[in-house]
Length: 329
Image 1 (cartoon, rainbow, N blue to C red):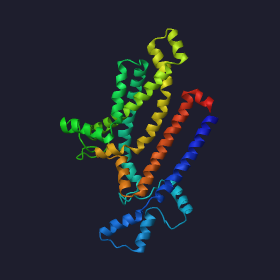
Image 2: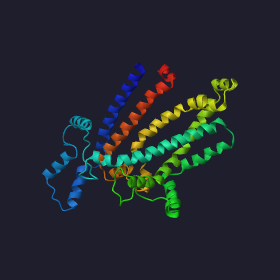
Image 3: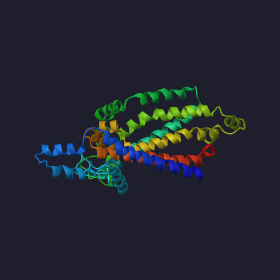
Image 4: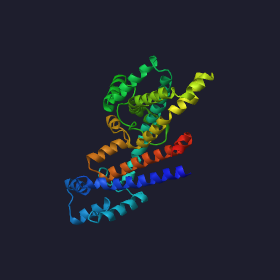
């Protein structure tokens, strides 16, 4: 119980530090979102008065003339109420609405792709590491080569062959625009079809890391005494592979998988941009391009919460999976 309480306490402090950094960093950046919004209003022929500026300033998150500590208190209060401000890029939509409209797309795409890459890579890595030095090792350079290829280049290759050349999958978008979004068969099938190439890009680009990491851990685990003892007792090789070697070699991959799950929320900016996919990555790029600090702050907050939450869950599970972790703590 002491181990678990200590872990939870650490993540509470980490959450407070992340919220504080999320408050400070945008205020250190050059530019002012109020000026950007007023410039857009002026381009449309609107009249700019001091009252207009004050109204927009309050709308975008409070009066910046107040002391920083007061702004910090207001920021924490707004965060815990779920009020992340108004987006400049998608004005007058609130930040929570902008994130909420794109987050399901990113979770579906990047989440499924990450799970597939981890499961396939760990399974192949365990099998390749079980027989090192054989022809199976040829999988390692093949997959690491794909991991070294830039995302956008790999995405363009898939688009060229499977969308432009063979016309098997759509090249851009998240679904057929003639369909009404909703939980119905035609829309879900369309979303699945449009997500195949972006998901394949992420899987191919990240497969090598999972395979290489698991393969190296398997080779290291095979030199342990308990593996030699299990084989000497005459246990079937398949049972030794599953219950002794792979079970212990997979532990570092569990921690890596947790971090990957946390970063699912951040999306894949390059992949989403190439495929014009309506995920959180494209919203983040738009926020950076337009100096939309409120939207950047909101997205970074969601990423932070996701990473901390995923790591907390895995830290707690790690203590149950591997009792040595609790003993060392």
